[in-house]
Structure formats: C-alpha cells, structure tokens
Length: 281
Image 1: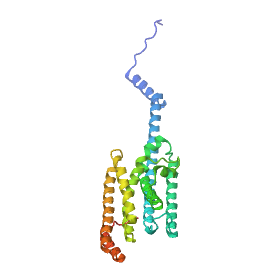
Image 2: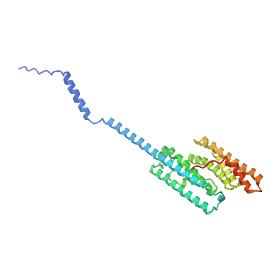
Image 3: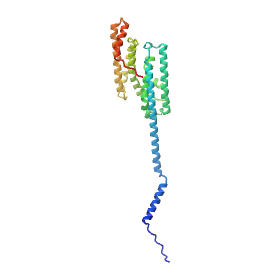
Image 4: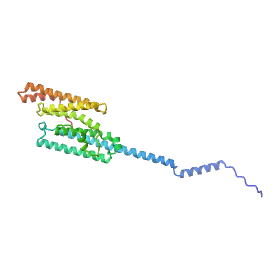
C-alpha cells in the first residue's frame, strides 16, 4: 500500500450547489442582523408617532366643530337681548337670558378644557403642533364670549379675562383672540340693526358704533402680523359702514318725524329692513 496521502477531490458543481443551499438555509433560519432590527424598530416608532398625531388631529378637529356649533347657538340666543336693558341693571327676563348664555359658555369651556387635558395641549410642543386644529372653534367661542361680555358690561373683554376661563389647561393664543374680536363686529352690526327694530332711536346704536370703530382702528395695525385678519378686517369695515348708515338714517328721520315717535319708528324700520342681515343658528 502506498504511503502517499490521498489527494482531495476538487469540489464539483454539485458540491458547490449543496454548500450554497446550506448557507442559504442557515441565513434564512438566522434572526435579522442587529443593524437591520434597529432600523425596523425605528420605523415602527415613526409609524406609531404618525398614527398618534393623525388620531389626535382628528379628535381635535371634531372638538373644534362641536365648539363652533355650540358657540353659534349662544350668539343666536344673545340676539334675543332686549335693548331696553342695555344698562347696568337689566330686567329679570334679560338677567335670565344672560344666565342661560353663561351656562352654555361654561359648557363650551368644559368641552375645550376636557379636550386640552386629554390631548395634553398644555405641553408647548403639543400645543404648537395642534393649535390650528382647534383654533377655529376657539375663535368662534371668543366671538360668542366677547358678545356676551359686551351685552353684560358694555365693554370689550380682555385677553386675560378669556384666559382665566381656561386657567393653565389651555393657552389662548393672541392671534385667536384678535381674530375672534374682529368677528365680533359682525354681531355688533346685527345688534345695532335689531336695536332699531326694538325702538332704539340712537342711544344703543351710537354706543355700538363707537366700540366698532375702536375695534377697527385697534386691529388694523395687526394685519401684517396675523394671517386671515386682512380678510376679516374687510368685513369689519363693511359692518362699520352699515352701522354708520343706521345712525345716519336715525338722525335724518328724527329731524323729519321728531314730533311723531310712532311715525319715526315706522320710517326707521322701512329704511333698514332692506339692509338688515338675516340671523342664522
């Protein structure tokens, strides 16, 4: 027998294929590499964060719509205000109306505070990301609240007074406050028109005109700083012109029919009926 070692047979195609199959089997059975697992985990976190953001956004948009609807109902209720009680001591009927409005406003505050607490809007980064989702409803609420405050006190509500309703649960942005006040001018114009229909011969309309002018002149400088304010201020100017027209009609008709109050009221109604805006709930 030869003492020479046996030569190894070179690997043939079948052996290479067999080795490749074994390698593939090992790779398929092995868990993902650490780097790949880290990437998958990161993308999973991104997915969860995006889903969480979208869910929160949808909930806040729904809350904003609910608040808008509830606020419009408060405004509609307040237009039943008796202009004869536009004074520090209202009648019992007007006091009851104001109490009902206050109750509805408190309910809206509760809705907003509950949503803000649930979504943790007190956190600055959370508030900044979602402010626009709830901002429309907040504007409508400020419009209703400021109208209520004006009828009750004959004054404009301040940002601090609005913020006190929410404490530290929800921050009221300055631009939402300004936009809400700009919207208030439309309700003031309707109130002035209703006042004439209830028999006012200039006292209430004159006061409304003064405060609407104040709002217009005060808000105008903020137009370059606040989105949407330019458009709203254009509407404010239209409301201001309508109130001026109302007071002009009162002045002219009073000169013509000062001796006949009933005729004066009838002529004022005829002058203003065509321009009186409809109320919507």
